[in-house]
Length: 422
Ligand code: ASP
Ligand code: MG
Image 1 (spheres, helix red, strand yellow):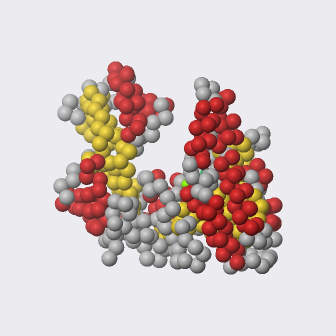
Image 2: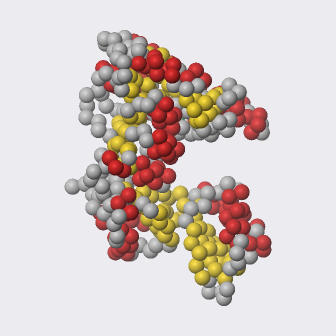
Image 3: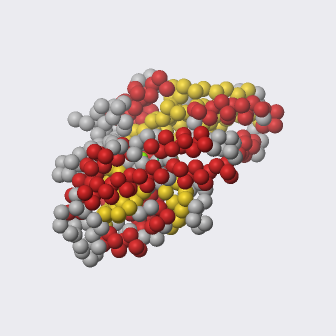
């Protein structure tokens, strides 16, 4: 491999997740993909995750050693332990690259200075000082950077929260003013819906930031939600593509970009679903100002995320029914909280239903097209699926249904919006 050295050459960030760097053989393949991009005249920064399973192992070790410690004595050293998974991968990849004759070095989070908040375990990046790395990259060296890591003002090591490497990669791309951030993963792109559920799902060529954000927060696990938020804020084009290919093989992936760059806009781009939902209903609730604030204040204080909220008149004169959803794993806690406060809040009874799913259709085209909701309700009613709750945003319609119909609903909607592959 000859030396590559240009002034003003475009920079590219390539990010590889845990399965893509799961063993040394895979790390070698990553090195080959990096070499090929470098050969095309780009300055390269590679952001890597820990080898698959490694973060879990480290979390477990920290929990064993720190058993019973309060957060103020645990969280900072937890970060010291779990941040090492990524350090290992950076060194291994730098070695593999050097073995191919490519100049490369690792830069730990504290060395570049990925400055972060001091919220250990879920820190947020505040600033990246990329000057020195940028100079090394422009001189032809590949910079290998750990995802997930940050450093506080007091020089303490932090981590960004599980799945945080995607966010690191986008932040590095923004700091380097890279032309794109390529996220290599174990799927070959973003699909119209979960291909395991719907074999006729199609890979999207492009998707807007807004739609991707909805998809990510609705359960499509391709990218960490925060990474999409950051990409949107900094206008970093992100491409999601497969890491299980050799250089030169077709690997178009999906480009997550500005809406304006998508010429052929679909009205609906994707269907997302989540089974991790539970519905709580407070029946015969007194209809006074401050009641909703009381209910949702209690849930917020307990850190329970509330999603779809519907209030409707009750059979009891002067009372209402309040229905809302929470993540299924929080259902028991939410129920206990409501039951304990029955007198103070003022309701007749509370019910919980856990076997519900949320199915959502997402598309920026909804802003300018009518009838999108009707297609959804028609398709569901033709399959005899009852809608228990509805929520909408500018680019999304979500319904809550009995979970046994999840698959049927997603398939019916995929067909109804013309998303099925030929
Ligand atoms: N290694 C970290 C995790 O497993 C960060 C990441 O891979 O995104 O959560
Ligand atoms: Mg990941």
